[in-house]
Image 1 (cartoon, one colour):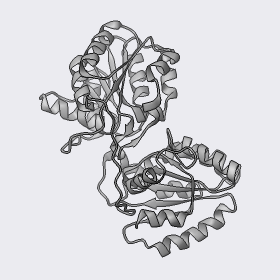
Image 2 (tube, rainbow, N blue to C red):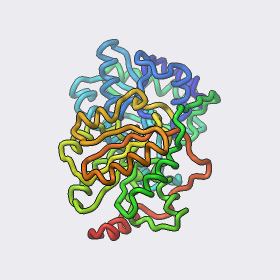
Image 3 (cartoon, rainbow, N blue to C red):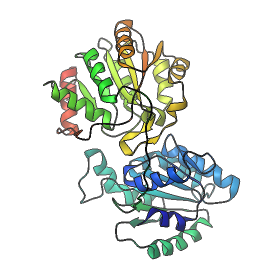
Image 4 (spheres, rainbow, N blue to C red):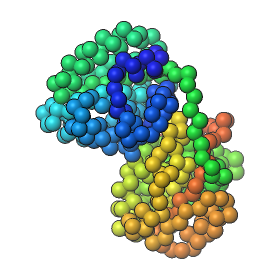
Length: 374
């Protein structure tokens, strides 16, 4: 279905959410129409944040907002839906547009499989009626469903469109980019060289795929790396839990800007815990690159200042390979909690592959190398 026609049927003037590759057509359309405009379109830190923004919009205008997300973000959405939006609480209407990853019967990555299986059931449990949009869906079908939904919105209820792959189409193009010279893969190459045999926890998305391929290209095993293929925003907390229990080992966390922003409060917990053996690296390309390239708020933030305010004992930002090498050497010998923000270019190799091992195999190899139980 043409996304411009779809948006016209929605007749909405406020959108917020977290980008999704399944909703790339909608995301690109919104960027072309609004860009990042606080009055009409906000790219949220996480899905719960988006739901709360939507609630504020409704309170101010009386209108129904639209929240877009990948189904993996439904977990972040549950609390504000159940304890804020629901008719038994404040009764705030909202239309959700959900990209359906891991749909049963459709091949997808392991982190999406269970989430895909429970997507429609989870929406049902939240009392959110859902209509599935696929390549055959017509404007008449969407229009008819919207008529039903508008009656629900008038009662302070919510509803959803769940979008299968290819369900929405858009011919418009958006070019995303920044001026930083060093690619993320190049940065990771320097980081893995510095980390040696230390355990590494890497964030979801292309960063973990690049870690895996760099190890392959060097003929190394994968036992030193925990590849967080899902659970966006939680790699730094995994690394913290690891560092606190393995104090004799230096632990490296490779985070992303979108992931770090999604659960920024983790930095406060890390900073107050002060593990001297943790090096937290945020690979900041100012974008949600793995799901299309829409910008994050990180391009306008001073992440080292945030880290220092949270209690990190060392926090620097680097933009280029020489500065990165110096920062890595200092962090490695510093024996104190450190953060390194690495400014990265947007983009990845066209032939970037995916791990050929399963998450369970990754866990077993990592724990074995770490000396923990499998």
